[in-house]
Image (cartoon, rainbow, N blue to C red):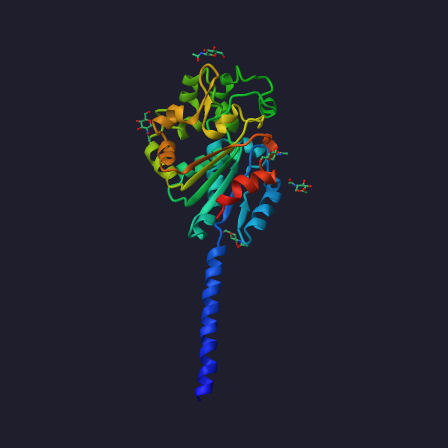
Length: 298
Ligand SMILES: *[C@@H]1O[C@H](CO)[C@@H](O)[C@H](O)[C@H]1NC(C)=O
Ligand SMILES: *[C@@H]1O[C@H](CO)[C@@H](O)[C@H](O)[C@H]1NC(C)=O
Ligand SMILES: *[C@@H]1O[C@H](CO)[C@@H](O)[C@H](O)[C@H]1NC(C)=O
Ligand SMILES: *[C@@H]1O[C@H](CO)[C@@H](O)[C@H](O)[C@H]1NC(C)=O
Ligand SMILES: *[C@@H]1O[C@H](CO)[C@@H](O)[C@H](O)[C@H]1NC(C)=O
């Protein structure tokens, strides 16, 4: 009788211990789900290797690369894309009790800003912006030549800031430093996100929603070659003399138009300036992933 008890007791203790241990391991291994948003003229599969790198570093991570608004469809108006991506992101967020991380590349970074500001029940923990023109774009690129073959940066404002121009994504974040009045009057996307137009009666709501974000990670660098000025990836931009003015000197920051200053004061904005990476390589370069991204994905 006594001997039986001795045998049963340790088994019970052992199995309780194992249950506890596996619960702890699940706890440790429960990396937050990750949602990836691609860039212009792009699609999900260019992130395949990146996704493999995430899963290798953090086994068990649920990574979703949203394959919508790909290739030419990436020229659809930004708000329409924001609504579409948001529809796909919402159920992933709902399943994730502890929140999700989002990694948004190039134009995708602006789509993520749109989602974060307009969605009042998002649960994004960390937003990693991978070389995204967060304060807009003002430069001649192959992309621009393709969409507007008859325009150069100096005169694109003539079409970008019209109602038909605003039906094309690039125009939605075209930020011409020499035509700021037209930009503020006609940009239905970036000027609204930045609260640089009097037209957004939801600006306080947008700011509150943005501030629900826990961490903001801004990645960009001088050899990007597409984002112009490249400092737009860090919320810097040209003044009317085409001199780059850094984030903290921007009016939208100083007047805290959408919460950036508050978030920075909270200590939740991290900026990485990484040389040697061209625009199409940010999500292909494993050093970038290992040194600047992996640590945020817990
Ligand atoms: C993934 O990596 C392999 C091997 O380095 C490379 O051949 C392939 O082009 C990469 N795929 C993408 C989509 O970058
Ligand atoms: C990943 O998350 C999505 C959305 O929550 C879910 O539908 C899917 O089943 C998950 N995949 C795995 C392998 O857990
Ligand atoms: C404009 O830029 C030029 C050179 O690029 C510089 O000499 C000048 O001081 C700048 N003016 C202002 C007002 O910043
Ligand atoms: C947005 O700008 C308007 C002025 O155009 C201002 O009244 C409003 O308070 C601003 N909103 C935020 C959140 O700063
Ligand atoms: C990869 O990134 C590192 C910085 O992390 C950079 O020095 C290097 O030049 C990059 N290589 C390519 C091919 O992008």
